[in-house]
Amino acid sequence: MLRFATRYGSNGLSLWLRQSNCRHGLNARTILRARKMSGDSFGPPTDVEKIMLDSVKATGPISFSTFMQLSLGHPTHGYYMKPEHAVFGTQGDFITSPEISQMFGELVALWMIKQWMDTNVKVSFRVVELGPGRGTLMDDVLRVLKQLPAARGKLKSIHLVESSATMRALQEGKLRKASQEGNFQIMWHDAIEEIEPEEDVFTMLVAHEFFDALPVNVIEKTQQGWNEVLIAPSSDPSIRYTIPSSDLDQNLDSPPKLHHMPSRWTRVLSPTPTASSTLLGLASPRFFSLPVGTRIEVSRASMNQARGIGKLINTKGGGCALVVDYGADRAFGDSLRAFRKHKIVDIFCSPGECDVTTNVDFALLKESMADLVSTHGPISQRNFLTCMGIEIRAAALMRSASSLERKKAIEDGANRLIDPCGMGEQYKVLGAVAKGRGEIWPFAVIQDSAQQSI
Image 1 (cartoon, rainbow, N blue to C red):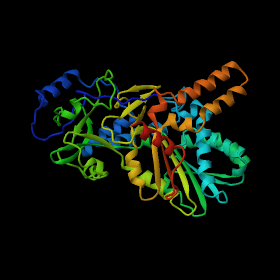
Image 2: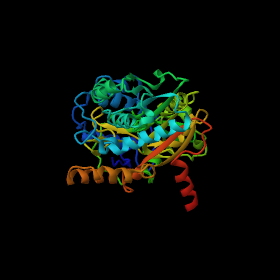
Image 3: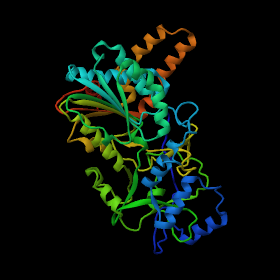
C-alpha cells in the first residue's frame, strides 16, 4: 500500500506554557481569538473524541500513545475493534501485500522453512504471527507447508497475537479448514508475552504491518531535556500556544502538505520533561547527540514487542523472524498519519474511524533485541522478494493461469509488490535468527552488493 507521512506546518501549535512566551511574531491571544471566531465547527465528536475530551478535562493534554491506543484499540470504540470496519482489502481503508498476491506469503514461508532446515529438521516447529489481519498471510504460509515433504508432520501449532474479537473471528473462518486438515491447533493470544518459549521447538515468526500501528510517544529536544508533545483541544482558552521551530522547519521525512481542515485537536508541548519523555529520550544512544529542536517518535510498545520476539527465538530449539513494515533504519519525527478508504487524511480526522500509523524505526527494534538474537537488514521488500524468486514464481503461476485476465492479475500483483516507486522500496524487511548462525540469505547478499556500490 502506498503510504506517505503527513506534514503539519503552522497548523501544529505545540508549545504548552503557563507563562507568556511569544515567538515568530504571534501571541497566544491572537491565535485564540482566531479560533474563537471560527467556533467549534468540527461536527459532533466521535465516541473516542468524547473520551479524549473527558480525559483532558480531568488530567490535562494526552499523549500520542494514549491517542493511538484509544483510536485503534479501545474495547468498543477502537478502529480495529468495530465489526462494521472492513479494515483490509479494496473495501477497507488499506490493502496489504498478502491481499495483493499469494506470492508474498509463499516466499515468506519458504524463507522460514529454509531457516528451520538449516538449523535442525529433526525438531518440530510452530508458526507465530503478530497482527494476522484477516488470516490471508497465514493461510498462504500453511498452504506452502502442506506441499513441502520435509515439513509434513512437523508443524506443532499456530499462534496468533490478536486482541480484536472481530479480527479473531475472521481469522478463525479463514484458517479453520487448514487446521482440520493438518491436525494442528490454532491458539490466539492478546499479547506476545502469553506465548511461552519452548526449548524443543523451532519458532517461526512473522510480523507484517504490525509495528506501524503500535503506540508512539512524540518527544522534542529542548534546553531542559526531552519534553513531550501532547494533544489538547485547539479551542481551549485555558491553554496558551506558540509555534515551535520544529513545526515550522522543513522536514525531509514529510511529503508536501495536505490541505488541512480545521481540527478539534492540536499539538502542545509539555512545559517540562515528563517521565515518559525522559525515559524514551534515553531509549537509544542515537538520540543523545540530537540537537535542540529535534522531534522524534519513539514506541515503548515496539521495544517490548521486539524483546518478546527475541525471547521466543533465543531458545535451545532456535527460531527465526521476519518483520515487514514501512520505515527505515532510523528514527522519524513527523510520520504519524491516518488513513480512510485508501486515502491519507489529517491525523486528527474522526478518531476511532480511521487507521492511524507511523513509520517504524528498525534500528530501535534491532537495539531492543540485540542481546538475544542476530538481526539482519533491513533490506527493501523489492530486494527480498526478488532474491527469494518472485519472478520465477510469477512465471510459473502465469503458465498455469486459466485466462488472460488471471495472467495479468498475477503479473500486476508481482509488479506492485516490487515496484521501486511504491511498495517495493517503501516496505523494509528485517530478519532475526538465533545467535551464531552467520550470514543469512538474502540479507548478506544485498548488504554485500550495497557495500560494493559505495
